[in-house]
Image (spheres, chains in turn blue, brown):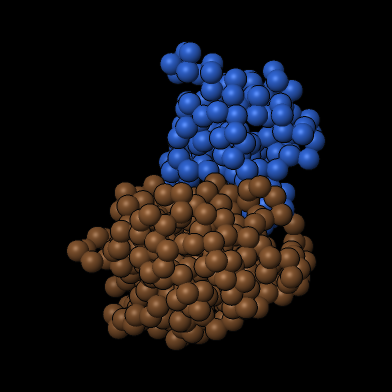
Length: 160
Length: 287
């Protein structure tokens, strides 16, 4: 084991931490930072439950090492409400019953956040393609797509 | 989730090639480069790899640039697929990469994965390498400033086998500028985010159904990505009459050697390639 002095911004707060350099990002988030909203599902980049925003881009934290966020901005589900679409997405997922067991939900919200920032006028097919890196085994997806669409419309109407 | 983990003892991170070459000799001999990590982290997590040390090159500045010269475009090996898909020079001069990007893994893996990693992983189904090969790209290797240049497929020796010297780094790709269009077709088990059963990338120039220049690459239908040279030669400079198309779609099947595995069957893969070529040529004729 070798120590790495990690400096990063986590959910808007600057941190400096000495970490084991061979720690995966998902383990750093859950075990070191104690932010349990980020889930680990497959551990192979297939399911998207571990999604976080790194410098505004949605990435699978099970496929990255913690040292790779050095000098970068990380946002987890715990900090997503401060971002455009974030709060509306959270409300919309609840309202549209897009959550059943809830394990995949943080990952979907993170992916949807990046997708809507890049594609604020996306149609349903584009939303489906944009969320193709996330799996849900409960809902059948329809309510998730509806929730993303409604959150986008609400945020746009508010000019948030 | 894998229960048996086999991560490296430690990771060193560098921000420039100068820093990398300076520090590399002091690191343990069992070391590997970490770029995007989308293949390496999974392989190690599942116990498939075993290296004492990883050298994180994901933020090495020289690997994260696109440079345009009069005759070519240089793409740094460390650029993410999503960055390339949005790059102006890539869209203009390497349409095959732009065409393959929407089918390359998932949107979020495209935010992490790199073209250098796609080649280093030496998978016969590598979408990015297929697109580069069809565009006539070269790979630039670098070891302490000593550079070597090869056609992109020339360093592939088989599934997961690549000709790189110890510590030699894939620095980037040099893609010659030629005005062309591209068609990228990929058959997956589902509509998006899947590993190819077979894929075809065709780059071409010409008009009124005549293929003035063309190159083609096929993935998941052999031990490495294949350029079907006889088919390319048959089509080059010719007008796309029905007889020629018929000959080409038969000939291409003789130039591939797919296997039957959990993803697909060999015969089916041959048929897919044949159908894909027919579709690609139909698209060429319609332009």
